[in-house]
Length: 548
Image (cartoon, rainbow, N blue to C red; front, side, top):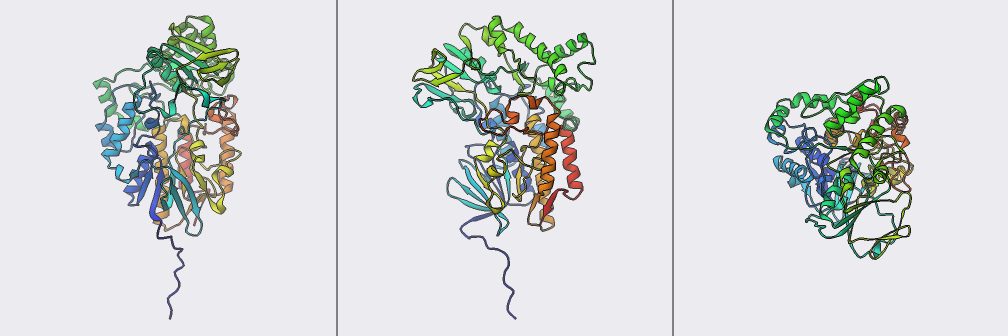
């Protein structure tokens, strides 16, 4: 009797085969590799840079630092790692965070499965094999059952949308792609375009070097003093002794800002229910505390415009106190959007920088930049001669890095086309029609409005458990149903509409990129609620997903 034909589709022998491919060697990619390896699966991470670190590898601009306390902005998966690593500052700066990522890669011997200097050009789902075909810029082709997009939320720099750049003869720098070698602005006339987080962090340092610094501001931002400083040995030990409790509080908090060195209360009362005097005391306390702890202040600050305005006016008052020139202070005061609905910044001497004689502020909202010239920038009838220009112009957030890869699912449908009107995900983790493709901290998850390392860690754990579920039951694929996906997107939008975030033109809604659909990108229901929803889906045998 003849043997039954082999019904298993064959993979081209010229194509390498792996169980999983991970794209990106930032904090999500490193931990995902660690988990996959622990499950006995073959995996490779592709990274376009020359080292690990993700956003902290690329963003080397002067003053780059974390706005979440270092002891909170760290992995929780290894108790040994928590005890072995010590942070030098309350808010670690880029070099130290990069060293931490490198330490983790070496501590767990991850580098041997990371291929650096490699950009993934395409990821295409092959329905005949139920596998992903990954193609790199080196011409490599790899077939993998699982594809994890650990590409980062803030990793695709926004294009410059000012005409005439090609004729400018001076030096140009992008905060998102800063040179690895030191940049010295001594004796130079420098322009900085953009006053988001990277601009606010870099401007005070550039001002100390430059002969003259001109800041071109389209929209003023709210910024809170970071109050950064060295970590004492006693503070380090206190945190290490209490990490278990600290992590429990992080995972059970809607935004993860629970206080590392000292506990910071999360208020549940309305800002309008307390007396003006009590409210003033609370605002002063958090201003003195530093950092982003206004996000855990009164419960209605981000849903009630009247409540929000009490805090917005408090911060505007602080700006006016810091900046001596009333006209400049007024330009630096945000007035047309609620506090905290653009990314809230933490700074070290930002507003005080405008008291320097060598610093000027130019309002380009009233009079936009017309064009680059050979020697600088033309704004209205005035040309600003500049030896160097720094673009602190932000990112195509949350979807840009994914769209930089040609990702195609079932029937050859491109992710870019499926998401043409806005991203469609289930739980921010997967998208229908793209089996076995997982996204870390993607649109539709708390993502950028939570502690990114812990958020990524939670996602990697969920992804790894889902892969383990498939492997143990000998299943080939998992993907959301269109119905579950639509219900989740509707829920994300409904929750978003109850907040003040949707009233602001920010990258949270894609408004910073011309032509990008204006939709709420992160899930605003809180990390604790989100985790429970993800757990419930698993407990109900992956409700809303279909497996084969």
